[in-house]
Length: 283
Ligand SMILES: [Cu+2]
Image (cartoon, rainbow, N blue to C red; front, side, top):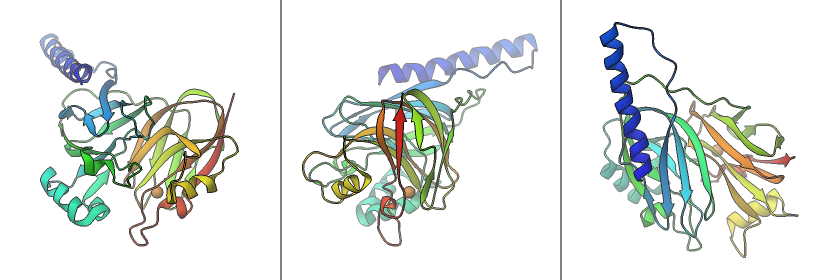
């Protein structure tokens, strides 16, 4: 948490100093976009350590999993005027129905113990909630155990930071992934866009040798024994027209892109409606 506070505050102070200099010299040409800041979020069993406030704009969100279970960090923006307490009450009363009160703003996808994941998002001002929807062996979502934390995103007058350069764009829609079926091993940044109309996520699972998409779906329905996959990050859910960037560092192997957001009408996970796609990572 301390490094993230520092990285949030220091650019603010530099920004203020730069504005003062520019005004003093009567130079009006804006300088090149400032460097993207990194916001650190630590997940443990079962809490988030994250800043309580952030300034709006482009930020790389770095999630580290310090727990024994898998975790992700879903950013939800509350409807204007809604408080964190009102949202938690709705969540207790309506469960996932409370998602109708928020917009999905992405976030670092699921990683296992000792894993980490970076996404870069352009945050609008508002009241946000950081949530982990993953359930452990007891079936209770982590957000019910403490992994639900408000973050206030305040307006910024600083010059915008540059968005990352993406190697390609992955598009999500009801109910498919439009993305390459082969990726090159190693570190790369990809843009993820939701064309909706429903909320979608793009989680990445590395299949164990010999395992298939059907094995992964069967295990998620009724977890028994070790999972036939390893969580390999991805992008958490966006509402329609949302977009962001994910930085992956994939090893060669067989993978799945999967969306587990529930369809409000049927309650079925999108993975059962077509949002599961095989892809290969090669050298
Ligand atoms: Cu979906």
